[in-house]
Length: 85
Image 1 (cartoon, one colour):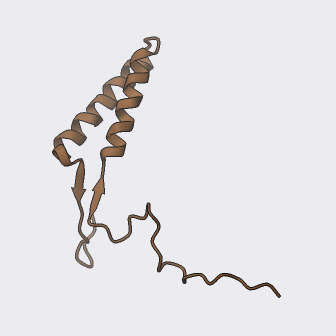
Image 2: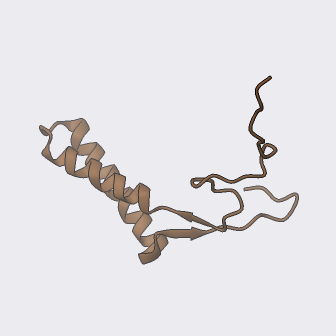
Image 3: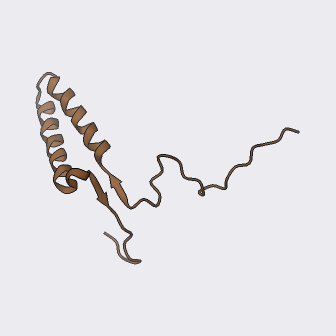
């Protein structure tokens, strides 16, 4: 019988991309992706849909910049028990 490698119990090991337990949400990757998409849209043939997408994504990028500032991070905390948004 072949030996199997020991594994940690489910949920006790955190992967590199895990966000469990972190106190900050990083929005830099979203901001960068919005910028890439805006560049692609600006090079696309102009249509009503393209212009609307550019306008909305520009608003999103400005909102992220305004809310997060230079850190591009939002600190988070748990709400007290019984409180919901």
